[in-house]
Image 1 (tube, rainbow, N blue to C red):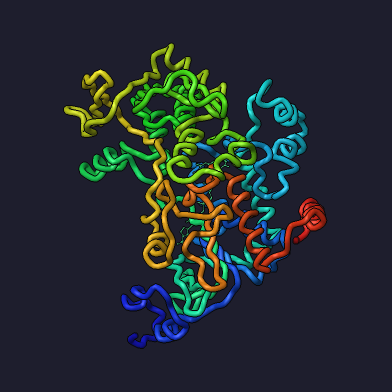
Image 2: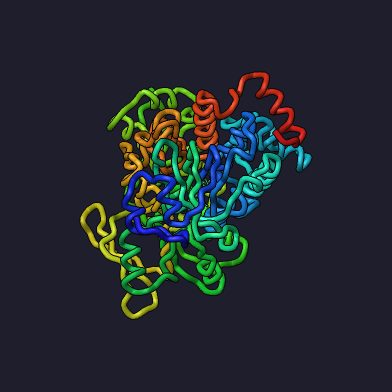
Amino acid sequence: MAAQTTGDITDALMADSVWTDADLDAHGIPRWSVPFVTIGGGIGSFAMVDALRVAGVDPSAMLVLSDLDAPTETYEHLATNSQIPDHERLRSDSGSVLDCLWGWPGYALREAITKRRPGPVWQVATEPILSEYFTPQAGQVYQSVHREAARIGWHTMLRKGVVRTVRKRAGGDYFVLFTPEPGTAPTKRVAIHARFVHLAVGYPGVRFLPDLQAYRETYDDYRSVVNAYEPHNHVYEEMLRRPTTVLVRGSGIVASRVLQRIIDDREQHGAQTQIIHLFRSYPQGWQGDSRMFRRPSRRGWTYQAFNFPKASWGGQLRYQLEGLEGEERVAFIDAVGGTNTAPRRDWQRQLEEGARDGFYTQALGTVDAVEPAKGSTRVATTIRTPTDGIGVLEADFILDATGLEAEIEEHRVLRDLLEHGGAGRNVKGRLDVERNFEVRGTAHGDGRMYASGSITLGGYYAGVDSFLGLQHAALQIQGALASQGFSRRLGALRSTSQWLKWARNVAP
Ligand SMILES: Cc1cc2nc3c(=O)[nH]c(=O)nc-3n(C[C@H](O)[C@H](O)[C@H](O)COP(=O)(O)OP(=O)(O)OC[C@H]3O[C@@H](n4cnc5c(N)ncnc54)[C@H](O)[C@@H]3O)c2cc1C
């Protein structure tokens, strides 16, 4: 291999699936050594490192490689864009406490204490029969994560930058090729030699509906057609300035939130917005097998408190899924998940009033074309209705709240793992992991690679992209690492003493 001293990679190096120490020396890429690395630095990495710290791992044994300053940063960005500011409520329950592995005290009790009112405790005690499920305010979750991050020494483990690739190291373990933030390392790249690698890179990307993406590219119009996950405040500002029509696509939780925002602006600030809500399918009545679970659909919306039924996280649905393989597993995950939203009374009332007063109308059909409307600045969506009729829906803005996730190979590190690392895909096309979240096919000597988050959907656990799911994965991985001697086991005594430390905000 040609000798270089710049810290740059070469095509020849990237073509090799296994790297030697000498390869890196020849490229002038310095080697750092640490037993455990987590890639991503978001909520999944946070849950992982938190579990390991509680299980007695010293911060000096771990590195967090991330483009973020705080673990909640990407989450906050996506939540804020999809109209969940700090004071709005999220979609997980009181016990999904990200900062506290034990789940107690939950967010409801904490809110009751902070606000000195018993309402949240009453709500959580009577949910879901007398009250709706309690869900925490976004800001409360962020603050509690920041506190826990400080307690476990997150910032001493964090190295800011971008991971380029993970490769097997000749003789065992891995090299994580990392581009540190400018000015923080002597060379452009460093290679981190680690025995354990954890991938928590979040969504590989947000994908647009193909017809909307085609419109944006063809007409270079990124203003009228927007995705709910990208910044789109100009849409709400324009709705306040003049009467507008907006076409909303999607019927999940994000669609609920953007519709609520639009109608709040009508109710509270006098906006004159007309809403057309386009559905591709229009479920009605009960869905699912009543022996396992079922959920109601009404006026095109399917209602379920959380994105999966609660029993998927820790009840009988979890154990049922753990025993399924192949197509059966896909069918099960699709049946209990799929597109659904929370049955909240406030937004159901708004939509009922909107339908009655004529500012919220629904349309059903598949999209044939999206193009500029003739003779106006609007965008025209041509749809084919279920009876094969043609309809044209004109709107000033199209808001895509379908929340499509990109394929895993659109993420450079994951694509590389599929090509060079031995990783494979599961039945849903995501990263294939074992029940303990080890990435199948990537074990190398003593080295083990694990993954958590949405990139593992399709495995043996449904709610992987949730606070509780990320904590579940973290505990499974921690257990696997404990059996390899990297951390202690979390038995009753250690767990109790650690909870006491957590309660006193003392380092683990
Ligand atoms: C709007 C929204 C609301 C949600 N609400 C809830 C809720 O109420 N309750 C619930 O339980 N769950 C909720 N979720 C689901 C889940 O909890 C979040 O998606 C969570 O952020 C997932 O954590 P993560 O670590 O997988 O990804 P993230 O938190 O997104 O972190 C991944 C990070 O990795 C970084 N990264 C990627 N590649 C690299 C690389 N090569 N080098 C360095 N860094 C890299 C990314 O930039 C990103 O910052 C919600 C999700 C969204 C999008």
